[in-house]
Image (cartoon, rainbow over all chains, first blue to last red; front, top):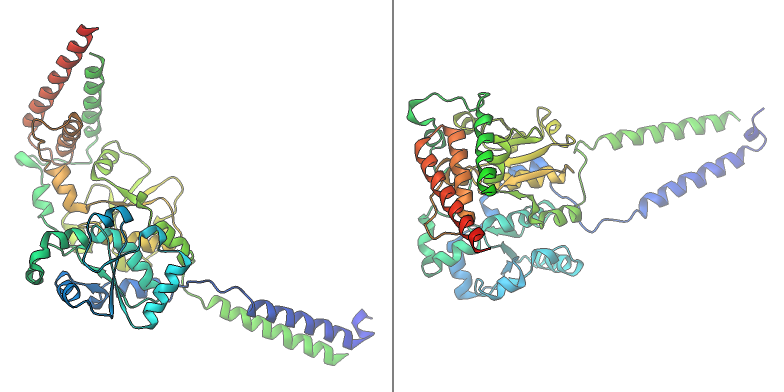
Length: 212
Length: 203
């Protein structure tokens, strides 16, 4: 005879308590401040959306009209920001991006429907933070194409950058295959085994020169 | 008594049904957004074309070059010993198996560095370490390794050292004009020898 057969209600009560504890545990699990809203494959596709980017010629209106619905965030260091920045931009250094009040601020801006434009010295610097914000559901965050360096070089004539290729990324600027083709007509196999020897020899000459 | 067993059975079935929802999550394991942001703002992931060239030339067995351009572009030109994983194919064909291998360094390569950096962010989000981005990408590779520019005569010695290395690398990767770089290399060496002689004479 099993023990619970003596008092069937006891088992029932114990089980109920067990289930209730489980449910309470799930409900009170701490919610992380940020969660990924887009899966990786969604984020990969989202990289192609042109509305995720901010183009240099669009800055002209921002600088002249200072609209309320667009905020420029400069993610470079405070010191470098002080040496020059896009007029009207605010400094929000990359290393304070993850601070709680800055994330709260970003959430406020998103709820107000304000477009946030991130830029760094070049496009690369702001690329990572921009991607992260898009992935955690801040669809109002845009990336300035070309970054500050491109703006600085073209600030006097931003309108003409509409037809410029200079800020575009992901393009080959050279014909790689032609440029890196073996010269002198020699069909040279890069992976041939005698190649590393040549390099070793070059290092030896360096050592010899240092000894003189 | 029997009622109890029925109750237990029902409870077990409900709990078992719960596991179905647990495995519904098809997304691979990934790190928290805060952690990812911390990683993103570190510039330590960038390696220069010179460093990559050196590792290829030395035959560094821990180096793995991952080209994130499209298949067509990869077929036209690619760096020696690089493999092709376009960003779109990251999650397919078991490509994730290339990452997180202990003792390997994965370097992402694209035309410039933006796409490589984007790939880096995705791979980092999946929690893999030891991943790097070749700064400047293949465009910079062409400028610095395949067609290096000779520094001006009053440039610091370090520039000449870099230039000598790049000329050597150029020979390695293209087999280009062995005579010209040799001449310039001897030039530099001779100059340095003279300098040390003067220094030792002064002692």
